[in-house]
Amino acid sequence: MATIFITGASGGLGRVVTQTLLNEGHLVIATRQYHDNPQALIHGFSDLLFTYETDLSDEVQVQTLIQRVIHNHGPVDAAILLAGGYTGGSLTETDGALLDSMMTVNFKTAYHVIQPLFAHMSSQSNGGRFVLIGARQALNAQFGRQAVAYTLSKSLLFELSTLINASGKEHDIVSTVIAPSVIDTVANRQAMPDADFTAWVNPQTLADTIAFVLFGAGRALREPVLEVYNRA
Image (tube, rainbow, N blue to C red):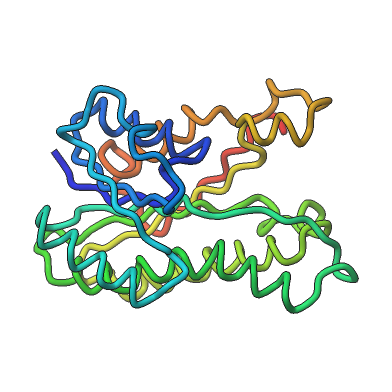
């Protein structure tokens, strides 16, 4: 049984990932926003799931939370950073305020967790694993040009992952970026009702991919960037 820290657990992808990890018998520590109902994440595994309220954009608050989690639950083996958001906008439509917003939502929320956990994992004999959710837009400008702030914020996650792998190599710390095309969630279906949903990426596929890199043969991968596009 591994101890896993996960952000964005109440989202369309997060719920599926959380359920998958619980099904496999892992201890899951999930962050939630203040308006989230903690019971919404519990599906008969209350003894394996612990939720904590926090504002991931607040660096001091997150650092305090990480210390509390380690004190309450012991060493953290892996962290899955799913928290984020999307706002469209071309280059001419993207001002500094929108850019700052996306940087906070998609990059800083991840960095605030990774920075203290990296220090924690560096002291462990078994190191640790990070999984970040990137985006195809950050790898292909043709997809990213209509969501500039979002794309730029997601692109930093790829750079951060590279830095984690370079810095954590001697400590057996590995970071994986999974870059989906469009995830088949309720929110995305509502936003794009005329799309071919069968071409999108099923959340369970992403959950299984995460489990693969954390606990399966994928654990041997180094510096992985996994493009999970399906037919979208």
